Amino acid sequence: MNYDPTDYRLKLERLGIKHLLPIDRIIYKYTSYETALKIIETNSLKFSPPKDFNDPFDLTTDLIGKSYTHSDLRDWLKSIPNLSTDDKKKIFDETKANPKKIKDMFDKALDQNKDLFGISCFSKTYQNVLMWSHYANKHSGVCLGFNIMPVDPSKEFALLEVNYVNEIKPLNYFKNQSTVFLYWIFTKSDIWSYEEEVRAVHMSRNGLINFDYNCLKEIHFGLRTSDQEVKYLQNKIADLGYSVGRFTKMEINPSTFRLKSKELI
Image 1 (cartoon, rainbow, N blue to C red):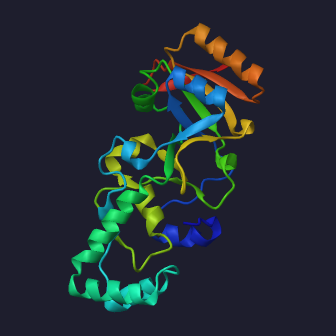
Image 2 (cartoon, rainbow, N blue to C red):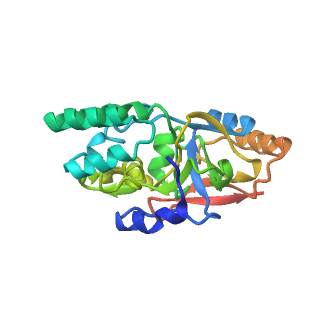
Image 3 (cartoon, one colour):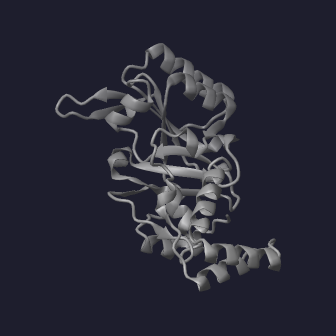
């Protein structure tokens, strides 16, 4: 699936999906100290297949509506370039006789596609107490700030804020073919809205993907990260040639139930 930011802008906004963040916007990866070291040493980020996610509703096929008219089905079959005329007629006739067939076919294809692409998850903020607790080893980890856009300039890379909803509202595939897969990938239950998630998606691969050294802009240490660990990672950054412009360490704000950051030299 090709992704053209200009082409999708208005269509996505009509669906309630926020569009691309500004290219200079920093997004944040919460992680353990050990994983942060691996990311820095290998200059790579893990793009996981959706089947590995902790939310069982993530990329549920129920988000994609499969209702159609015979005209919709004909138009869709015509758009498939590598399918012979005989095969198209066979599918049309079989589906006409058994309408459930198309739903089963789509659900199977969508589940298979989950193994083909990868997602790396970020947040819009580095001061989220729950995120530090859940993803950064109970505040003893690290939050890495990235300008992630240069990770892959191809049309198979997308970066969008997650669209949080309070109910499953299927988007019909046949009526919205150009946007339905982005809707599927970037829509989640609003019980996760505290994460303020931004997703980087590679449409054709998963696993470790290298990023440019200039992508890493900030490093924030948890309030329980030791001074020795802070110093070691700062030295590692310098030795490897990164140009990180900001280091901070999180502290408890004594007047609120929030965190504050202290700038480090």
